[in-house]
Length: 73
Length: 149
View 1 (cartoon, chains in turn purple, blue):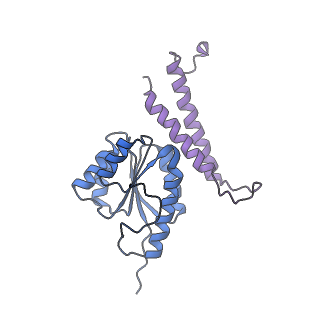
View 2 (cartoon, rainbow over the protein chains, first blue to last red):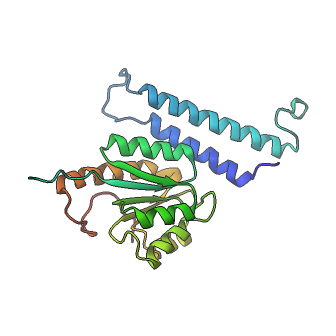
View 3 (cartoon, chains in turn cyan, purple):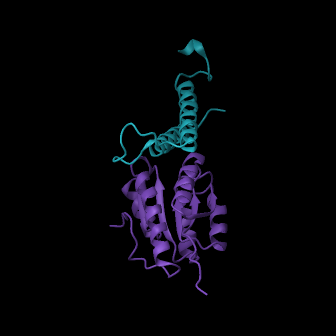
């Protein structure tokens, strides 16, 4: 079944928004200070995974082929 | 005996698991309580009929139904009349904003560019609730960015 392109795009946007919020930190924290918790790091990775998977689906649809069809690259 | 004030109670209507998790972690970090969530309008309306959250965060695009259905039901059935209703959506256009506000939303935010403001609002409302204890909400006197123009 082909993915709904609009829905996939919104999924990418949601993932990027979450990633931005997870990675944002107080501007007054010194640059060399590590502030991202393991939980936030995992959430950020999940957001990247979701965005990547959605972009892959979209690319496949826009190329008119199946997901992972190397001949379309 | 002095009553222990309840934390800010929040209900989330959102179909994106990633955004739900982001909101949930902010709610927890703010010392508020996530009392429920739903990815569809019907479940949200049923839940909100039973729960009395202080704050309802509502996405417009849902797995089934829409955030407008939720707002309309809240308005028509007078559910959660004192709850602060905040819309957070990717469909941030004037038409949707006006419709949301006419259906009783207190604020309307663009998910792409204003999510961090919603997170700040959650923290501010949680702090305000702690400060004010269990006194009823004064709708014209709470902190945060409210886009009701």
